[in-house]
Length: 307
Image (tube, rainbow, N blue to C red; front, top):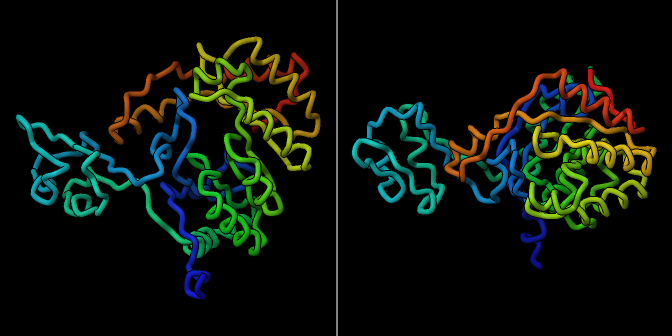
């Protein structure tokens, strides 16, 4: 390998950076969202992060049907009977149509960045991390799908003395976790369903590898908060809550279990991305999600208290 190749910066693909987050770990945080995910959750709230490639978003509500994009990129955009159609399969993500759209109805979701660019960006908020005992959270998609970029990113952020949280589905090669373990202060670890067959029905894969990785991380003395999205009519079941409590008792040094009630944001995002329509489940009031939390606690589970 030549010296130039060795010095070439590692690049990754992200779809968002959110500032002043207060639900992605302790304190005030900046959350970096990496693209690519091995799961296909029925209730996915970040469908723009599923595909590894960049993706064209089209907001029909903003479109003024001026035809500018058709002139710029006729392979992707057409006006048929006065209706704007988008052929994303023909899109090469050059971004010409996005730049030309006067109504800002088009957007390229995803951008390639270097680790140095991300570190420079998130470090602008360091004073807020220090004042609130916050930090940086890496999320997705599934961050472990970009293992080299993830490792380099958390290593460089840790050099700045910043708290790092990693939000992960658990569906990855354990060696990825092993590599980042020295730099990650908190794993926000998803537990979407405890029954392996139902997990496969809800996400496309069973949960055996996910639970195996959880136990290996725990044995490595990682700090882990188990985050459990609950969707009414799918996994709001007594046996699931009992299994979560049993998992908590098996792994007593977990930070705890956090119940995350479903919200509908993913369905509207899927529409913008031209993905298969996502079913909207019932969004329940806080009082009902509190009952789910109490159910886990009543079965002996260690529940993480959210203010």
